[in-house]
Amino acid sequence: MKRDKPQGLKRLLLAFGASGKGLAGAWREEAAFRQELAFAVCALPLGLWLGRSGVERALLVAPVLLILVVELVNSAIEATVDRIGLEHHSLAGLAKDIGSAAVLMSIVLCGTVWALVLLGR
Image 1 (cartoon, rainbow, N blue to C red):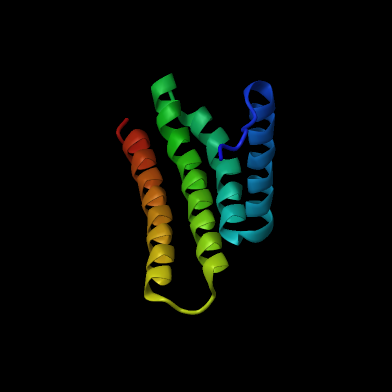
Image 2: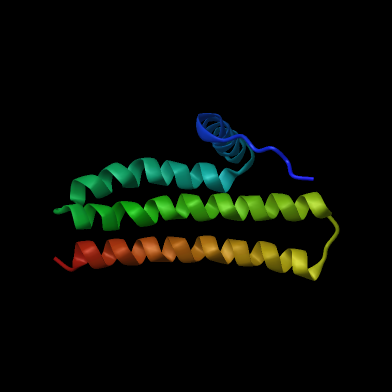
């Protein structure tokens, strides 16, 4: 049986509502997200100010936003794994570790891009 899905403006409004709930939940439940958001609040204006061109500004801003995106995905993975069960399972641990590694790689990417842009002048 096919489920009727909202379309058009209603779908868009519901999607924005779900995104807002997701951001609020991440803020409420995830200390790492709050820390990375605090970093982004400082780094985003700094990147816009330090960038000499539109390309440099984009290169400085994009990886900062990517950290937040990857943290949100990591938090979703962790919540899903925890929902399935809190007992230790090697695959559950691996899923969480891989999500954490993805966050680390986004942070390394951010540092690398900032260093290349700012030190390459």
